[in-house]
View 1 (cartoon, one colour):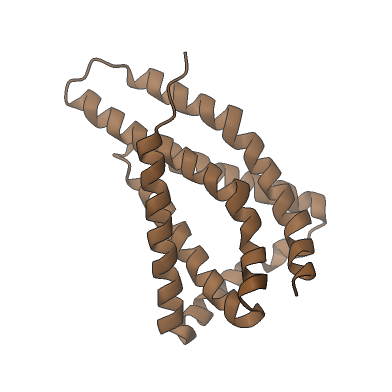
View 2 (spheres, one colour; view 1 turned 60 degrees about the vertical axis):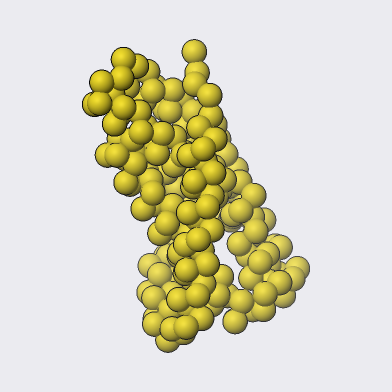
Length: 188
């Protein structure tokens, strides 16, 4: 039998993501040249992906996001540290990217560029990380003498990942490649 969704951990991931989004945005606003240099390096890393055909791009983004999200979730077994760092770093990165995009394209177009991520991809990643945080908590409880089975908790988390996260991350990759550019062009 599946376990209930870890709502408290999900609320924590949302709060952490938003706090670090603001921190990334603020950093970029206060240090525009450093933020631009980081952004340009980040963008350069992903330039070869832009040369792929759309189907390959969807597949590559899906595999990349799935692997990273999976590792962040199961990394929660290390006392929740990995999913917490994953959420914080992604929030900061998106805040930085939003700041730079808003300066380049205006607030409306920048919002349209990141909005599709916020509809499916970000909530899915945060949900998987919530399970990772919960796994860290459950492992700590087990080490402190709780009678529950950590294996059952891991199985429940894996079930959630494969039944829920994987399909949603595929849809998110599809949206990122095929719909986001159209929305951005409409609001140029």
